[in-house]
Length: 185
Image (cartoon, rainbow, N blue to C red; front, side):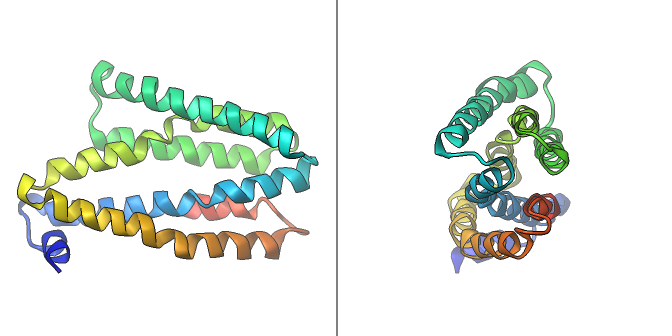
């Protein structure tokens, strides 16, 4: 109850609106994480990948995600001194363009290209949390972050089911539809 009060209480300069938008953005980002298990099924179906080929791809993708987070994030924040909102937009755009590449791709090279393009996407949750902490006083941080944690836990109960249903429905006709789900969210 205290967490809900802290989240919804009026705040100056439209901060409550920004806080709720951050919660929505975090929910959508969490929603998209359930694309990953479906990506294996997609690659197996479209490119006849086995576990070894997919593991190589995921290692490559993870390396770029870590690089984007550990190198790209600090460059955007400290080097270029960009505002949190702009960094969030860059990260979201990075994921969006990667999904367009995944949809357009007709060979495994496209998946690798999408993985490189998405390298700045992982900065989004940490920058969102940073932005949230700047919106609220320290007395409310624990309560608001508790709501973010609840969102992180609750959203996958819905998102995993949606990705599975979409993938099963489109498997034989348009398996790339699963990436459109990510684009929409």
